[in-house]
Length: 520
Image 1 (cartoon, rainbow, N blue to C red):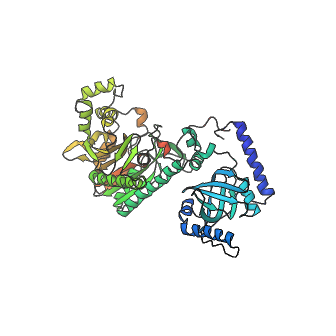
Image 2: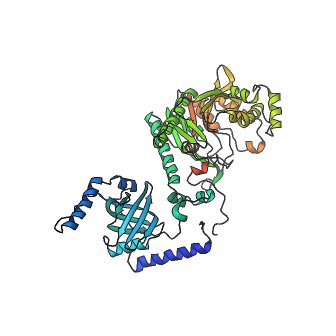
Image 3: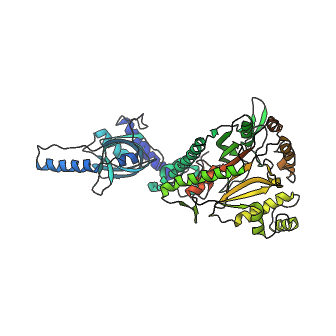
């Protein structure tokens, strides 16, 4: 167990909590791990129903009773039942002040010895930071104008045996935050807000697509061959069939089979797996939304993607109160039309010579220490483009880069006017590649030839993971309508819109090395 304290302190504090656990069980007859509780309000909802008029009337009636014992106390204050984790506890003897936290926010609870029975008050006295409490009573306001539940009953619903981070201010060590996400979420409202917003963004994408008659589908996670994108796969083994399998790199080839089968508009939101880099922008398992539309093209997908991102940004901005959202020191305006340029234009602007000048390109790649020996021309250009041209874009301006070299896009339809150019775009925002879109290739003979040629210049070790997908070619022979397709990185979109600089901050349980400090 990892805790931001030394081991001796941790064991001492846990022992104290276990002593209280025993007292709850043995002296009070309480199950310190709770039971079903109905009729709970969120803390935000409980705070929102505070009634100033009823509160003032109650105070006035108490004052009247002091003047005239025959007067009656009027109490029309709304009553609630709430639950939350204790993040602050002040023991004032006959009055316990507790601050509870749930997914909606924080709320103060006051527990008076006069107004609760002995068992309820004893539980409030015995509670520790991190315990989960259920409290019920009227919603009032203290003399310092803080909305508070004045408890009539209190029950410990779960006794926490592990000391929380100091003052529940959150975990300061990023590595510790990722390893102990449960503590990070409980201690940090900001972390919880990011993942609440992630859920809202994904739900929003799903709603927007289904609203436009796209059908959500699911395709296999385990494939008999690695395909759909150029990346190193993870491998696994199925015992029942004694079969080696690959975790999917992308769902593309299965989704296209559904176009063949007569589903005209489809999308899938799900995980992909790539056995490659691990850094602040890459996690081996990541979430994408892939969309395909029969009789669309890359322009259809460009317009759809821009509208999805703009709507997602609008959703987040409603909380921020601005059309512009920060990403580090950048301010990105998603309301303005996104910029567009072409691959060759951006390359020439950044490097000072056209993509057709391979002598200069190879010399430049060598000077920069990039891969170049034995690589096909298109791959050398791609190395330079990613290293230099992409980085020359203004990261604050969402930009579609169009017209990629056809040699880099074997699943994409070539431009009829120039077969060397593929009808493909990539979207870059905040210095990150966010998505890519295509006019899909549906000629089975051209696709088969592209499969055979696409790995020219790839080393043997890499090419062993890539196979000719004869089943997909057979599907294309049945007939796939002309179509547009796109893939959008959900994790990176959430990073941008929630101002998180690491992909680990938007994945609940990111990939980490085993912790050498953990107990064996």
